[in-house]
Image: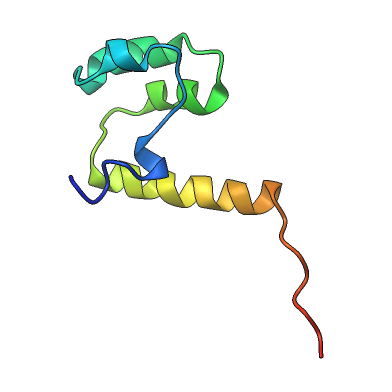
Length: 77
């Protein structure tokens, strides 16, 4: 729990983070379903929120970031 708590896969954007606090995931899903942010709204489709789900989302977000923010080409000698 401690290792995954503040990873990107366990974080999302919302206008009601303080309100959600430590609510159960089913209650959070209700709020997420009404979000105007796609990355947050997608969380409402999850049935469970556990370590495996967080690790999967970490990987998905990392892959998305790599597609969006393409780094510089490798330096050639």
